[in-house]
Length: 288
Length: 245
Ligand SMILES: Nc1ncnc2c1ncn2[C@@H]1O[C@H](COP(=O)(O)OP(=O)(O)OP(=O)(O)O)[C@@H](O)[C@H]1O
Ligand SMILES: [Mg+2]
Image 1 (tube, chains in turn red, cyan):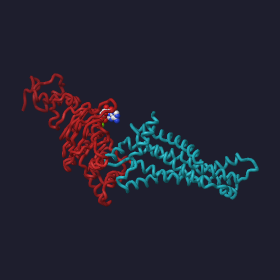
Image 2 (image 1 turned 135 degrees about the vertical axis):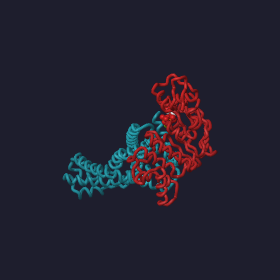
Image 3 (image 1 turned 135 degrees about the horizontal axis):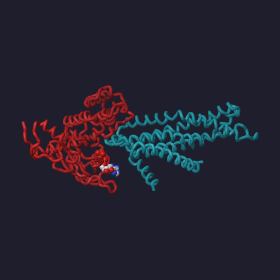
């Protein structure tokens, strides 16, 4: 469990985080969502200590991560796995060596045991064995993400951070990565924090969602509540596309029984067809 | 102002560097890798330039010493001393600043920009210790060795060119080589190359490690690293010559 208390960060006079409080629980995918520039990456980097916050506390299972000694910090870091936005694979090393790296660094296992472990995690992220000897530049972006995820989990971390795990991936591959993150989280009961602005992931794996707006926590909840949230800003964010606006309209129809004025004829027809209803009266007239 | 800030950052870089490595074996591997990269990797260029420099300095010395009262052996003496004192360590290291320095700066810059350094930090690794220190140690070990090779090859190149052009007979050249030889010169050249080696590995490490931004910035910083290393190298050359000769 990670607790964040009144976290603030400014760059010069620019206040990026304005006092965020949050509790990120074990065994759940904690999603941090928000539009570009809302401070998600800064928030995550403050949590893992890559950026020093101006004020506030980050507690890892009760231990204050910011004000402890370097040695203690290292101990916690060994329990952190992080998947970076750009994968951050060591490009001078093969896929196998990349995943092997944390094992070499922090364990005294025999080489054969390490190799077994690497094969195990490669399989866990659905990568073929023949990826083992390839260099990062020789595999696709989606595969790089998976290799990076494999490297992040090879030491069985207690905390897993993923910064935009599916940016630059097609929707199908994104879902595969999302599912993988979710399974790993539940399987090992770890605390997972995912930065994303992908609504697919939000609906798919959002056990606990924090919506950030201009450096502040604007809304908190799960993927079941999110589409019914009352926050204007969050609604603007999740219903940003025309299609989703229509979905929002449908939601309103369902809730109020009234048709919004700006609904297009096409959508009206589609809704009528889909739900086998007649919308021409004052609201929902016919139904099956 | 910027210079002072950069110098402060440079000094600061050493603050975190001298800690016990997380894993001695990995540190050693990294050190050996750097020795191979820096030492073996620059051997080719050092062989080529030192041989030619020796050859050219024989020809030019002979051209300048036209008087019949000066014995031919003097040519060998002059070539020997200039190669040992100046050409091998200073010119050699300036070339290495370009070869090794830009490689170090761009390698670290790329690791910074692509968040590989952050990835290492997250794992709990002291990246200054793991990435920078092996480069500086490997440089200060292998570059003086390269410079010794450059001295030998420079003198040999001079001998070759002298006899090929019919300026000086190899036996006379050899006689000149031992004439009034002062071993202190070699010692001085080694001190110089040690200091230069430190400069051309530490300065590019600093610039590379602190790259901010993107790919363009990597190029700018590595150029800057090479320029600053070369200038400081020549400055150090002057100071050392004034102090030690
Ligand atoms: N090192 C820095 N120096 C100055 N300003 C910064 C720095 N890092 C981030 N910022 C500012 O902080 C704000 C939040 O940036 P951040 O990268 O956290 O956004 P984000 O929510 O992750 O966006 P995205 O979804 O595009 O990744 C931005 O306005 C950015 O300009
Ligand atoms: Mg971001």
